[in-house]
Length: 257
Length: 249
Image (cartoon, rainbow over all chains, first blue to last red; front, side, top):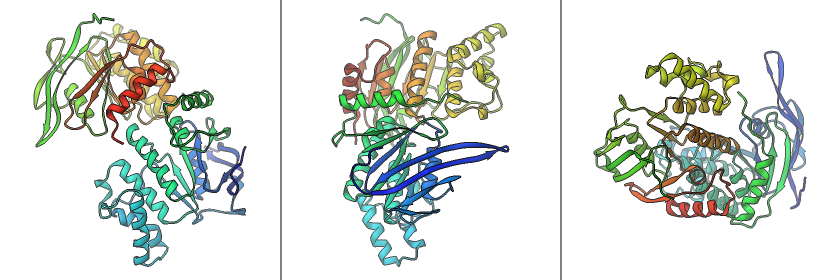
């Protein structure tokens, strides 16, 4: 595994997770060790039902690993940590709160005074291109717009690490392309360490500096790819397509019931 | 290369308004028997409304739709529809689900059995024929829905982004499967998708819809040999062109 650009932000050491199903152990994450560099755009790519979400939940602290350790800036962490924020696939906005209400909620729960948290939230609402929609409710927004709120909410909490779990999976192909450009634009404005999970090879190559490929469940690192393509990337470029073919041939397909 | 197939579906001056909102504006085109037609357009342009009209789920504001020269009528014509989410009946096994349309149209038992077996064999669903939808993965569930649609030998098979939610490797597999079924059974298929690459991979012809109110912006014939390669420069060029025509981002 090549760790090129300097500081390691997050380290997973021998992480495994199994669940008890009818008295038997069902292994979902199989002994994963990996490193994430500071401000890297790292993509975790794998077929459906490969265990990627469980791994993400473990990193985010929502679930406990069965074994293994996680280190943030060299120190072991347990459970949730304010430096790690997640953006979900099935758009997790509170339907009774406005865009502003949803964006500022993390700070509100942390007891930050209204004036300060509003100012911070406003900054990120504008950064994701939703100026003017502060008082809109989720049902008034398109799928892409809702995901932008999710991203603004995550950024407002000022995490070091942003985890995005197939955030564009529910969007149609075209909106997906526009959101890919959006997330890159946002990342360039304010660099964070990003761990982005997807099952879409084209998306992975378009976004990632590095791609970690997982096989079928249980989640195990199959291969790591360094993506050296210049930005902005073009998904119909011959080099892009070559890379896509290479990774695709290595990707598992699960036709199981 | 001239296409000698006869016209199966005629769409004449199809227009749809919801109150004051004009969604589809005077759309006219034909579909040949056994053709695989893809319809693409920018997000929100009215593709689903268009499909709903073709399948007679809603009525047009004006214009008409003819199947085999007669006004489209779900009681007379076989119209099969595949939605984005699997729509299998949870209380039926795979085998029964696939045979459902044949039950409705009262096919004779022997013919029904043969047809079901043919579909199951073509799709490799032998292992799961006696299972229920809840025992299947989402992609297998969707595959049996597609099998059900092809099984009834429809006059028109309409597919609305059937693979939208699936991972990319599964999509390639399923796209190949639909081409295989289509070739083998000679069904007339209209396939709607947002995914231009998918459209170019599958289609004999692509209809490009404009933004609302939707009109036919352009029609493109794709005569690339099969199996098509997504990295094939000719396919990429068509894909680039079509993307330019609908790009709104």
